Image (cartoon, helix red, strand yellow):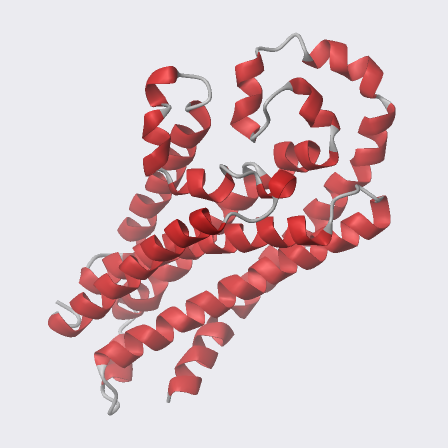
Length: 268
């Protein structure tokens, strides 16, 4: 039963995961293709870009205009600084909202619960399936990045790509766990997805705008996105403290689900 529920979760998500992976691959190759062009045009572009306020580059995880013309800075501005974390968060939130709340709305959850298996076990297995999907998506991003690196010679080491992809996967799973926990407590799938997605966007903006407004700088510490990229993994590699924070918040979501799901009526 354990294996079947995990595999069912993977099977239910394989189409969306496939298309997301294909999209990630195409976009990553596309971004890598333009790196040599940007590098060649650096002298012409840098004077233009330096006219912008320095704080503006903080929106994309950059400290100054010059970093845009480094491989890590370029990838941060185009992919890892905004698109990857937001996309992973929303993808995982949609999956987390579906696993309990979505199945309850579709009247399939009560059929599953008619089997001789505890609700706690169902919650663990569904969450494990979600984690497996996110790991596969993160592995797809890593593979795409390595292929782009080989093709276009950006000059970033594999361990830096691994750090960025690993922390992006954890960030996504955090928001997936939040949606999963709310679904376990009770709520409609669409509402849960909307609320968690809104939180994701809001906390992303708080983290990004913290570089622009001094009064928001302290608020960045409440944003999960801060713990995704405050160490700038493409520049400096993995930060185990940030990994610990992301993991801890993710596990809190799982624990809430394990506490709430056995204590509520299905379909009420």
